[in-house]
Length: 589
Image (cartoon, rainbow, N blue to C red; front, top):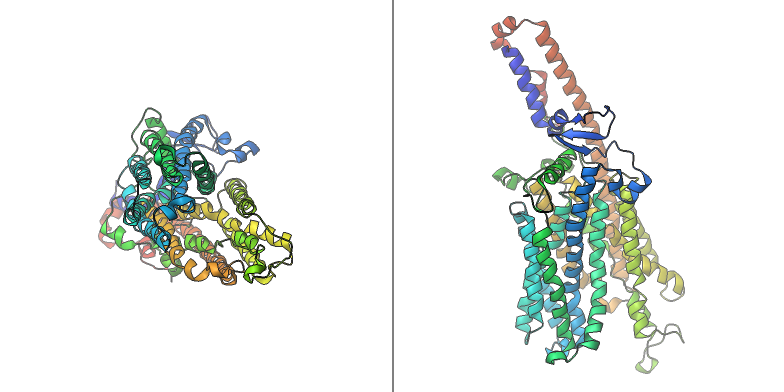
């Protein structure tokens, strides 16, 4: 080969190295026996379905595996019955364990441990402290250690600690246990999002993460039922108070699920080992599916990677259905995108969720005139069971909307997440604005309906984490860190803000709290809109630059063909820098 040809070949390889998807496209080919328009693609001798070109059937919209090939159906069935089931059960138990102390406090713990001051608040604060401290280190650990061992170990540890809580005799012991429980539980939720995002495509991810997500809400709801049953049926059994039994019951449920995780939870697709239920062929197919959407495999933690922090220019994916594009070869993205932190989405949405004053509102009807309080609506009052049960349909609204958003996002919207983030934020603004501006007692049905809609703001939670997963999919380590940071930042704000914004003394009006929710949702609308504007602008730039690169390569090929190899070798020292060399040195302003 002539020297000129070698140079041209070298430049071609440089383009491929600058755009990994260009190299991936080189490896793609249509499966044997199928036409060029087929959605069945072969990569690295593994066949998979190109969902970006696939027309979704009604059955496929209900559950995506209906539109996939037989091998992918088998793979997803294995993942759904292992990874998804374990994550959902684990999150159910996590929220059960997380809320059990509040139920125990109301069922005798207060009196038995002399918790007449701020002891419960202190215990909750120590749990939050452990939770905040643990998330990022655990997510970083997951990039190097098989999640099959890390995640079940965390669950096993908090199960043992939950069991130990039944025997506490003093507050120092309770404080220590609650801190350690928070530390052990801290990595579970973001770690499961990271693991789910390592196996499912944008047409599959939202449905699975929403099932996982709502299981936590159900766990918190069932905690009260379990405590009621334990208090009624087990109080005094073997000399133990009823509140102590709830910790024993929780541990009995938690520990076996953790043990099952060691057996059935898969590792990451790029470093998983074959098991009795997941073959090497399954692992190869899972890796190719992630490669097809631009989700990167694990890389070493280099000094450059650490110093990059959360700079989005290092992890914008190319190929995901709803992610940010990579900068064009030789260019950098806009300064805005370079400093954009995706974890802000999760922080804004999480803290925009209102703390519902529904129960306080119902209880306010029971004001006792004998104690100097005027009844707001004479003759109207509510029993304790009504006060506890009437707000529960709000959880049902949350679950139904979460599922609806997920199915629409994965289905007709082909993996887009931002429309639901925008809609959820707008709905939250309207509901909180009406609650803040209308009288408390003049229209009972309207206010009751609005309180049922308040949890709707939380229904976008899984999609927010999906969007972060897909935005950061171009760098595995950054994806892990940003998912952890997003949840961590949300908890830091939640640990502080309610003390000033959602004061119990201001319920049921909560005007300051409703204003807080309106403000954060408004900021989120602006934030998402600004991101989308820059995304569309950079996509246009990338398309234009890709055309320029094609022209440069075509010109180089024509020059090499028209000039003789001998002349090329003779004039080697006089070869000027190619247009591509000059282009790579330019920076977009």
